Length: 456
Image (cartoon, rainbow, N blue to C red):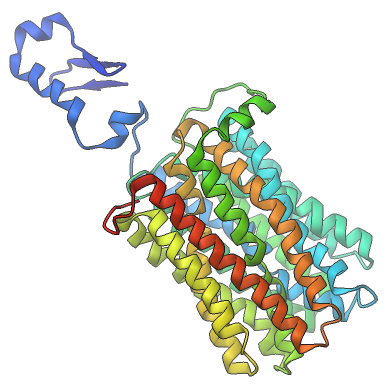
């Protein structure tokens, strides 16, 4: 990396030393002294990498804006799974079990996560431009095609496979781009970006519910598709990367992947995330169905997903601001543990409309922090030039527990007519989230020790 003083003299990093032109050594001793001081300055980005993080500026915040739109369309759409789970059971797929229907709403999360590994590698190689364009086409087309589907197979393909391939592209291209602009304020930037998924999670359930009643399910899906297309056009125009891509594809060989698992910090963090995700998606998937089982009014039950995601907006931004001061690991491990406790303490005894709403709001707030800080925690232990692949690999890992966690919940619930079965599913979710939170804290201790004052 080249640095330049006010008089135009250039200094070049060479490993751990600074090479200074001889002319400058002769002309200005004070300049030499100052340049050597650069070696011990407190900015970790200058010491650890040749890449400089702008921490702001027009391009950086436009990237955050575009990433917000991307998350609105990616995770925001995926977070509406509870609404579709209940709707399909009562309408097109009423002859199928809740476990079979859950694959329609679960596959988007699995594919978005599993696709992250490949998409992340393409991001490191080529940047976000073409990835965003492909994602825009796949997601909007997949949702539009769902509007004309009336049977299990086509719905599963269009809503469960095609559209999620698009969300995988959209999600990872935008998330990876934001991390290249921020280091010191990364949690805040990612929190703002991630709040887009919560806003989408508020708007989409209401949009689908209202339009399904007034103009029918087909036009409700088309309206959602057009909204997603418009927002992703904004994302295509604003999302850029501050890191110059390699310009050629580096094959994602098994050796490259295996090498990541030699990093014990990465492995321990991955174990924590995988255990958490065994239970994490169950409230999103079954909150509407459980409220309906308890006799909650149909409109209110469907709006529980909106309540959950509305609270998640604040959970993704406010704690993220604090995380930049106290540490991403610290904030994440505490908040996801609290989310698990909320499942056991509030969802388990929730029998009325009011208690279900309170649970939705509190779970949305605390779980939202966890989602927002996942990439920040991974980035904290990763080289910025491999950030796409590393975050992608982490999401690929959590796809497996997502794949088995929700179906296990469906098996526990069974025909959804027994109180004990619902309680068993909730205990399963809460216990695994708390256990994952504890392992997350152990990962933090491994990095900085037991001191509660350590920022990590």
